[in-house]
Image (cartoon, rainbow over the protein chains, first blue to last red):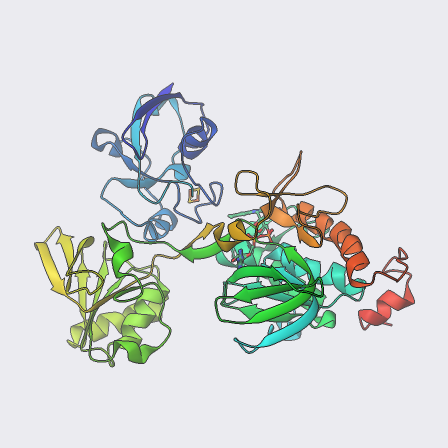
Length: 106
Length: 355
Ligand SMILES: Cc1cc2nc3c(=O)[nH]c(=O)nc-3n(C[C@H](O)[C@H](O)[C@H](O)COP(=O)(O)OP(=O)(O)OC[C@H]3O[C@@H](n4cnc5c(N)ncnc54)[C@H](O)[C@@H]3O)c2cc1C
Ligand code: FES
C-alpha cells in the first residue's frame, strides 16, 4: 500500500501506507515537513493537503467539523482536505496528495 | 462545574512596571499549575500570555474536546480543566498580563530578571519560568504573495482601534466568529465592508450568521463567496484585493485595508531570542530542577526537552513541583525548605485558605 506525497517544494515522495493510519501520521512519521499541530484532532488545519482530482471521489466525504476547520487554512481549494481525517485503507493504495501552504513546520 | 466559583483572571494594567518573585511566560495548563506549586512555597507569580484568556492549547485548540488522562478526572474538557486550574490557583492571587507577548529578558544589577512585553509592561522577578508550550499563538496568514510588505499599514490580523478603519473600504477575510463579528461591527464605521469567504457556509455563531445575512440583504455590506488571490497597490498601501469566484470569475475589490481572520497557530517566537540553549526549538533542561542553560531560568511543560520527555499535561504538572523546589532556593536563599503534604500541613492549608 503506497501513497505519493508532493512536498511544499514540489518534490514527490513515495511512502509506505499502513492500514488504519491517518494519512497525516504516515506523512509525519516518514519525516516529511507537516506541522500537524493538534496531532490529528481536527483542531488546527496545519495538516492541510490538496488531493489529486482523480482521488477526490474515492475519499470519504469531509464532515462538517473538517469543513469548518478547513476554513482556517490559508489557501483552500476545491480539492482541499485535512490529511488527519483521511484513514488509510487498501482502497486508497496509490493516493496522491500535495502538502498545502501553511502546513509546513516553522 | 460550579462556574460561579471560578474567578476571572486578575489583569494588570498594560505598560506598568511590576516586581514579583517569579514571572511565568505562558498561561497554558502547565504555567497555571506552576502558580500552585510556587504558591505553596510562598513564591508569588505573574503570568504573561499572548492569548486574551488563560489555558494555552486547552483553551485555544480544544476547549470542548474531552481529555481522559488527567489523574482522578476520568474525563474533562480543555476548558473545564482550565477553569478548575484557575479555581485551584486562586488562593495565590496570580497576576495576569494577557494579550501580550513576553519579548525580551535582561539581567538586572541586583541579579534579578526584567521581562518586557509587547505592551511595554515590565515585570521584574527573581526567577523566570518558561511555560511557553508549543510556542506563542500567532495569526495564520493568507497565502498571498508579498503580504508581509502590507502588514501593519493596510493588512491586519486583529483590530486594536475600530476608529482606525473609519471611512475606509475594507475587505474582511474568513468565515468564523471573528470575521463575522468584525464585519458587523465595522460596517457602520467603514465606508464599505466586503466579507470574503471561500464557501457559503460559516463556522460562526448562528446568530451572527443571520445578522450578517440580513445586513447583506439590506445592502449595508457585501458578501463575496470567492478565494483570495492577490493584493493590489504599491506596498505598504493596499488599493484592492484580487479574488477568484466560481460564479463571477476574477475581480478586484477596491480596498484600503484588509483584515484576515483565519485563527491562530503556534510559533516559538521571541523565546528563541532569550539567549538559552535550544534543541530543535525546545529548551533543554535537567530532570532534577528543570533549569535551563541559564541559572534561575526554568522551563516546564511542552517547551522543554530532556531524554524521555513526553508532551503531556501530566508530565508538565510533575515538572512544576520539582521546579518550584529549586526556584525556592533563589527566592529565599537563607530559608530552609521542608517537604510537606497538603493533606497534613496546617501551614499549607492556611495558604490555600482551607484551615
Ligand atoms: C487537540 C489536542 C488534544 C490534546 N490532548 C491531550 C490529552 O488528552 N492529554 C494530554 O496530556 N495532553 C493533550 N494535549 C497536549 C496538551 O495540550 C499540551 O501538552 C499542553 O497544553 C502543554 O501545556 P503547556 O502549558 O506546556 O503549553 P501550552 O498549552 O502550549 O501553553 C503555552 C502558552 O504560552 C504562550 N506563550 C508562548 N510563548 C509566549 C511568549 N513569548 N509570550 C507570551 N505568551 C507565550 C502561548 O500563547 C500559550 O498560551 C493535546 C493537545 C492538542 C492540541
Ligand atoms: S493535525 Fe490538526 S487538523 Fe489535522
